[in-house]
Image 1 (cartoon, rainbow, N blue to C red):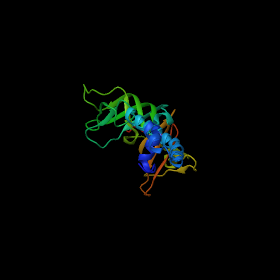
Image 2 (image 1 turned 60 degrees about the vertical axis):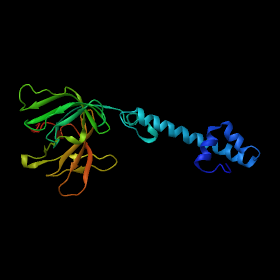
Image 3 (image 1 turned 60 degrees about the horizontal axis):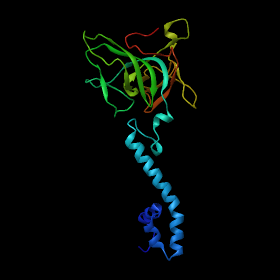
Length: 234
């Protein structure tokens, strides 16, 4: 071996074994390059092995350098209601953990029912955990998961208008609170197409605007939304 350049030389120096010492013996410059490169090589190997270990032992998914995303974004407690809006006729999968790789606990129906409403008590990484479920118009004997995680992209709330004048004609939709930006007034035709976060009784929603190609994201306060599609919650 005439050179320690490249990945083979890096790995050999990082190993720090007798082979590296024998190959570089009698050449001080080569040994110096080996010693200087071994520290950075060892750091690289440590990060590589750490990332590989986390990626293969963390079923909930990993983020930068394999650190679990759950550590950066822990579950947040909530007390909100939403309803299922999954277009899949087979139903909405309920997971044991907030990831698609987690085993399914069961399915919530999306057809032959009037509505499926969930009481949410926790949120994590775009997933919502429900502690109870209510199905309107279901047949008797329908078996349902009592609790579990569902994707926030497949549940909704309705925007709740408020009266600002003397008659119902004076009602307006709420303003969407956007982190780091000014609130924006929602308009007729805007609709929520996902609920990805919640804190207490507040919900973080994705709003589709027919008049715009872009979608809005922001917070709605309690009283500005309704989690029951069969009523107005007023």
